[in-house]
Length: 432
Figure 1 (cartoon, rainbow, N blue to C red):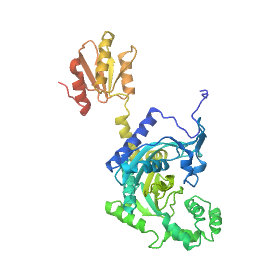
Figure 2: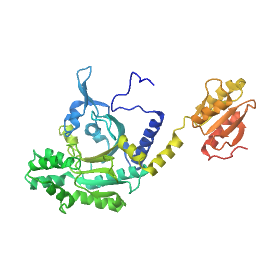
Figure 3: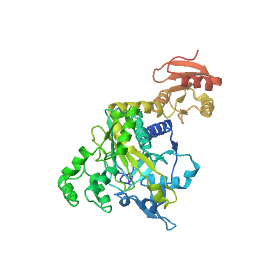
Figure 4: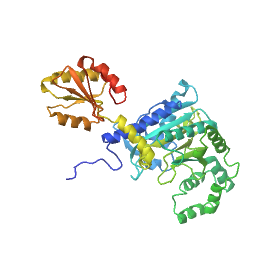
């Protein structure tokens, strides 16, 4: 087959109907868990002033922006993440809502980075945040939400682990070892790449701070009891909730964005065969920074992207089975496929389709004349539950359950009523 003249751009995706159905599965699960845990949905613009992301992003993000000048001469960027936008709208509207703000968002983000497994240049992200609460209870509530999301997607405690850390612990370590405030961002960047950096390069980078790899790894393995009081409180809170098997302290977690100020965490698959499935933490100064001090709101949040979580679902048998069950239920093209067995009754069939659709019943039919067998094949391809046959017997209709081939009959003038009943019932005889 000859290559088509146009393809999707590197790192961008087409969504076939199955891909859309999988995306809808993720969105519905995310939204259901968020609402169950008391979060309200919000949304931000896809395009923002570039200055919003340069204000205090740090790390690699500033070099990954889809940035351009619009026709009005403005320096704008497709959003690479949502937290900065959330800080902007929270600063503007926080007086209109009781505290804490428990908000969530599901939306598309863009980063110009190398496409690879679990990472593209466009992706959908589930963002969950609590603003206006400074204590560790908010961090525990947020981590509990992340765990509930994983459970709702079909995972168990054997499949993933939440690794909790605290930047404040590392600030204490840095002060003890003579690292200045100006040097801290570079030092934290080294710690953030600790598990990915080549040993000789890591040793050289730490030597610039008069540190050895053993010193750093020793601090991670055996941190002082008072290194992170916040983490201790969070772990105790999560233990009381019954989540003790899902969490552990791991000071190797830093998170790449500079706006994090305290406790941070990441969700990893048990085998650690891929990048973090989700991650986040406390960012108590971002709202004040974005608003130039006009509003000061402590905040904590996390995000989960669709790339990595889909990969993990597909590589975890029981989670994949749960997703497939949902897809079987929710990815039908229609519930009822009308089969025109007698072309002289096509007008009656068309009126019937209109009636059923207006009643909220998902209905389809072949647009052109076709043999009955071919129409049934179309019904099967549409994954319809039922074939409704309009034939010589009209206004008597035949209803066939496609999964079992069971057949029953009913009158056309009350088709809406008995079909509604039928769709709400399990497969099996219903009509007299």
